[in-house]
Every structure is written in structure tokens, then in C-alpha cells.
Length: 357
Image (tube, rainbow, N blue to C red; front, side, top):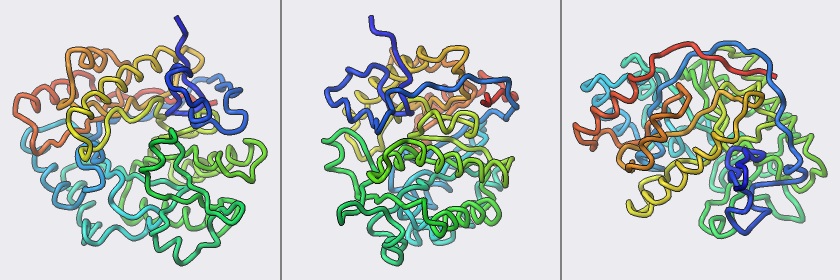
């Protein structure tokens, strides 16, 4: 039987032959020759139990849903430590301007989360921006162009790309682009009180066609995490869609597999099938970790509304105290909420080790 592999980044399949498009392992130049760095003893970080909005509401997240979710967490005393506001809170690229229709007063939403003694996590994709964003309209020269075309930064299997929105690749060689991302991080931490940053689609700079090797993209990612680590050492980072080589030792937490579930816009029966497949994929990726490549990993979310007799035992044995939940808590049954609470409470909040290079 073929031995599972972590691949070169979070979303690489555990078995290269799982699909017939080798290039679409999200693999740019030399990615297949990557070797993960060996790790030394590490510094401790606090464990995290988070609820993530993406899997419950997709792009339809808003202030009201966050507020109602907080009421459920309080009523049932669910032992979360963080609320992660995922994709949907703003247009990609307009990171300093939350969507006013969904979050009329974003600072109020943040304050409500903190008033419930929960920490705030915020999702963003630092290397990408929507062609509909104000950033793109005001600064089209900040984006990578090749043969007269802007570069689509979302790379996946060809069929999926037909349905994905156009998210263009920012040119991180420009100092004004770096300054813009630094300004957002500074504002999110200082003004909104964000203590966890979920950075997504980190593989994007590897697909800049102007690069003839991986060093430039590698250095752009390490620059980003070093900036956060140096200026905000207490802020936790989750690296998602993340190449392992530049993030191990710099990101606090690394996703090692694909999203376990898709947003609820997908039909329930289809999402349940995908969930079963991807939880199994996660189990294979966990099997690829060894003692020299152990990372403080985020297994992504458990979605109790999609669980079955095969997925539940996997979640109960995952050796990580990073625990995520992606259910719509507002509409979850009392029985399921009780099960969820027991699962979260089964592992005590403890200080765990983050490997560093």
C-alpha cells in the first residue's frame, strides 16, 4: 500500500494519484522536491478551542449571526476560547473596510465577542484581492501582470477554478503592498483587539509566472510571519493553504489538510459525502507525520451535524488540542450541543509545544 505523504502544502493530497491532474496538486516549480525541515525543542503556546463562521454560514456571515451564536455559547456554557470570523466579513483586499451591510459597526461585533470572555480570530488572504475590491480599482498597478493579464491567485483543480471568483495576485515585491498589509495587521491587532490571525491561500505567490525558482515566494511568506512574530508575539497565527517549508517554525499553527467541510451553500447530502472523504484524508495526513516533522497542527473543524459512525472515532483520537467546531450552533439540537460540549471538555486547556526550526 502506498505510504501517505504530507505533500508540499496544506491542501496537497495524501496520495499523489488520488486525482488525475498532477500539476493541480497546487504544485509550482520544484515543489515536489521539498523536504520538511527537522525541528528542535519549542516554545509553549496556549491551546485553542474555536468556533469558525465559515462552515456554518459561508459568505453569509454577519453581525446578527455572530451575536446569536454568542448567546448559544453563553446559555450552554460551551468552553470555547476563540471565535474566528472567517471569509465573508469583507471583500478580499479591502481588509481595512468591513462589509457595512453585514457589519455596520465591526468594532461592536468585536466588543460583543470579548464581552463573552472569548478571544477574536480573524481570517484574511494576504497575497490576494478581488477584482471587485476598492484596492484593485484604486491601485491596479499593485497586482502581478503577465503577458497583459492579471494572475488568478486561486489555484485548485481545473474544474473548480471555473466556479471560483477572480482573486488577483498582489505584487509583494512592491514596498507599498507590504506597507498596506502591515497597516492592516497593525490596525486589526491594535484597534480591533484581534489575538488570532488565520492567514489563507498562502501558496499563491508560488504561482507568480515571473519567478523562475521558489526562493522569492518562500521569502515573501517568511517576511509576513516574521513581521507578526516580531511585532505581536502574543498574537497566534494559523497558516492555511500553507507551504510547509516557509511556515514551519514561524506560524504557531499549521493546517495539514483541506477544509473538512464546505460552506452550507452546498446541498447537505453532497457536503456530508465531502466531509466523510476529507476527514479520512485528514487521518491519512496525520499518518504521514513523524517525530521529526511534528507540527502544532490545526485539524480544521469538526462538524457534528455531518458526523457519522466512521468520522466520529477519527475526531475522538486526533492528537491535537487545537479543537475547531464549524456547526450552526443556533440550529443545533440540544443532544448534539451536549455531545459537542463533552468533546470540547474532554481535553483540558493546557500549554502545548510549538516546534521551531
